Image (cartoon, rainbow, N blue to C red; front, top):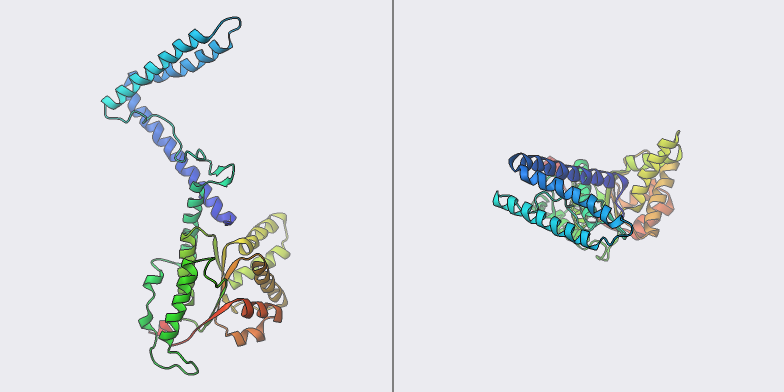
Length: 329
């Protein structure tokens, strides 16, 4: 899974802040103990001097350093024992002055030989959910809070199922898609219907759950996404080009991309090309995508190029939303 640069930066900054906080706490604890137990400070000073004497004994020429090293080692152990007894006698843990990393695997660097450590990956997961919460105002939105009773349970013009019956099936598919992400049998979703029927709410629920499972998720509106593609092509400086390249890369490589409000953007030839590039590149790479739109599948064919529409309608499972605008209720 590939977290985007913004998420990784925030996670690494948090890792460094937490490491610095632990260092500050250790230093404060050390000052407190030294002030209360001066003998502990003396022992620590002697132990630091022992290291220098060990190195000196090991580097002597023409002499066997063994006896000296053994004597120094015995003295070192005796000092450590005395310090531990002093600390525990006065209500402190014996190891309270040891500088230990929170993560023994990576030493709080966030990386191991095989790549990102689990500690940094967990921070990335948390920061991604926080970013999504800021964008989508997630609050307490989850599948358990989705109310079917607000949908009409009466026949709807032109539809076989009532709005409530339809949404029961939609909810089941969206829940399965999120809970079994990557293993559900449906890779891509096209949520279609009028405003105020729950498309964004369910997308937010999916984004939250997929993020909680540890996958990288990017949510953005069609207007912002296509603006990113445009900035990448027409950048006026190297820095602008670098930022635009990073933004577009987020859209292309994340595990789940949620493209919201398709159809609200100005549909230019460039937008047509960008939509095809986004959809086709993600399909080719085996990446999963959700598209939300107020447009019906029929309206898509009149607005976008045939290659893009072919992939949207051919490779995506279309879920129709219909009924009375919930905001009017």
